[in-house]
Amino acid sequence: MAAAIDAGVGKVRRPELSNKIDVEVSINDAILLTTDDGVLTALDDRTLRIWLRRQTGKYWPSVCYTLDSAPTALSYHETSHRLFCGCDSGLIHEFLVADDFNKITLQCTYLGHQSRIHALYFASRSELLLSVCREKKFNWFSTNPADEKHQYIQGSYTLTSWGMSITMDETSRQCFIGDSNGIIHFLKIDTDNKCQLNTTLNGHTGSVQNLLWDADSEWLFSGSFDTSVVVWDVGTHQGLAVELNGHLDRLVGISYDNLRKLLITCSADGHIGVWPMNVKRNETPKWLENDSCQICQMPFFWNLRAMWTQKQIGLRQHHCRKCGRAVCDKCSQTRKALPLLGYETIQRICNDCMQTLKNDETVPLASFYDIRQGTIRMDYNQGKKVMMTVGTDRTIKIWDMSSVV
Ligand SMILES: [Zn+2]
Ligand SMILES: [Zn+2]
Image (cartoon, rainbow, N blue to C red):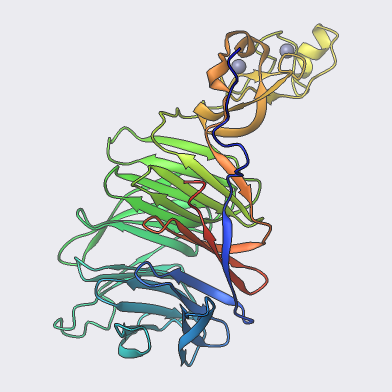
């Protein structure tokens, strides 16, 4: 008799903690350096610090730069060593980071915002710096020192609520701005610095905390406080948006490993999701509304006339996650995950859909890991398969991800 051999026996696949930095100050933003073993931090004690891993294996600050106001958002371009740092006061400073990471030098201060900077994006090829802040403004600056008055705003767009996240497709100069109401604004900045609103993308019910653009696939990933991630297929121009549901808490970090086609996600409760993106998922169906169950025809509780004529007690309306129909509880007794529709946790399925459900429709695609740390930020380096998480306990943890990606 042939024995089944499990190749994974004895080896538990999970992120392995490889290092920890006790920062002891609230961390507003942090970036994992890909070239050296280092971390850039924006701290609430008004310092910018660079932590490098020393021969002892421990991380120690190589730079501690004190600012007039607490740094709140960072953007770093590794090739040019240009570091942009947005502050609580609304100022944005540009630094040049020394090759050995032992020194940073102030180059320029950009003026334009009057309140806390929430996110920055530096587009090196177009020499543009994008910023959003607490005053519902999206501003952009020229980062080319040859441009006259380049430290002043080149253009501005007023949002309907706080801007929380930004990303950009540099080739087409399309910018994506996520706001605190769950809307993504899709704008184009022309070469003469005028902007035009293309559209708004509505798919979230909570603040859009993370935005990520993958230029190869032309996918926009958005992570929200509503616990979902949406993959917007911008490239095909068909308006396809797949919702990924698996986290139970607010999304605080997303990263795309485009070598392995894996999306890495992190929620505030310290759960890490790893989602294969080389799978064809479908959009979730729209929820239908009806006055009675679309299977057994029993009236819902607001359908008073039918309740009276049929002498029935009104029922609560539920929705089947597979077909979207409005059904009663009795007609939707099954609970299953539907990973091909982006649902990795169990969902309500109607009795009709259950009849036709195939086994492969319920097999999990994503993997989830509990790192047991309340988390406010995550960064990931695909070259080294290393993840960084920033904890609510003022520590930064470095994780070896080689067994999960
Ligand atoms: Zn029913
Ligand atoms: Zn159904």
